[in-house]
Length: 164
Ligand SMILES: Nc1ccn([C@H]2C[C@H](O)[C@@H](COP(=O)(O)O)O2)c(=O)n1
Ligand SMILES: [Zn+2]
Image 1: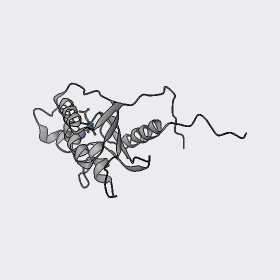
Image 2: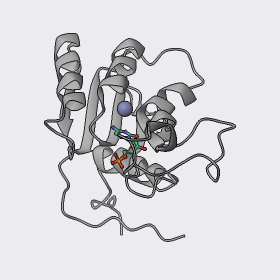
Image 3: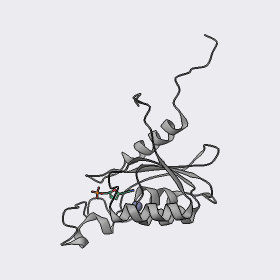
Image 4: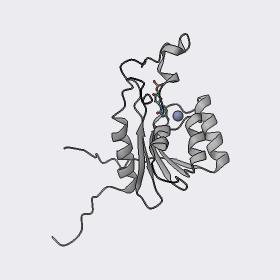
């Protein structure tokens, strides 16, 4: 055999795959989200998943979502850091200017602010299951105004399996 392999994964498959794998670290029982930030020359800069801040125990803070309206203090939303924000905060280098974010779920309005301010210029997202909600509408409004490009990941249809 003299030629190179031809069935290697694409950059989008690679980085979205890393984002999916990162999301598998999440302890959230209902929605696990993963993120991966990549430089313009396709180097991974940072990763993150949704979870509670350092020092806030996964076993003590609440993971429930149903009681948000009547008892927000005992629901997860006040406490969970979104995967995109964690990926931005986990970055230990200089600047994220011009970088690309792969995320398994479309960013909310709060993450959109951090994405814009950190200099991320492109978002590749997986699911958009909260499309049409005020948070996602506001997010798209800000991303559009700030010139952050976004597009949905297009699965190739081939299954990428990880066996260790
Ligand atoms: N773009 C997003 C959206 C949501 N999250 C996190 C926040 C929560 O931990 C969970 C959503 O929970 P649900 O309301 O679906 O039960 O996902 C995120 O990290 N990034
Ligand atoms: Zn968010």
